[in-house]
Length: 201
Image (tube, rainbow, N blue to C red; front, side, top):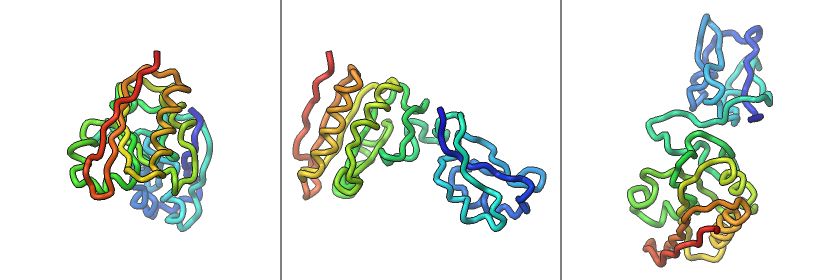
């Protein structure tokens, strides 16, 4: 896939190592006294390393490379987890039970990780704050990967309806045949309702 990653000009690099420390993904390392992009698939394309470079040896390029999906101890999760930033295609989606959650739910429901996150790939978003329809992005993710199931976690407030509608629309648009479920959390942090979605076909 074509995506944005960093490129390091070794002629400009002074070997200070600041960029390697600034890279939260471990994509940059030091070799032969110079900074090097060790793993293109570890580069998230967000550029935390750019402002750290005192010699401006780092720049963005767009090129054909592997999708960003850093191997960690929690390999079932894509990264970034924000829907608008998440990769469309990644090996960590294959066979995944996908959790798509409204941002607020993790802070209102105290057992959020234990009851919902563990063992699932996670995507989060807020249609009110992001002011966007996630359905096109989610449709691409469903078309390009073998998702096993979807669980939507939303608040009972009206704005969270946008997240539920986007997932339902993406399931229809993608033609995906998979089970999906909507769990609604009340404003006082309790499970208010659980609704089963309909599989296509």
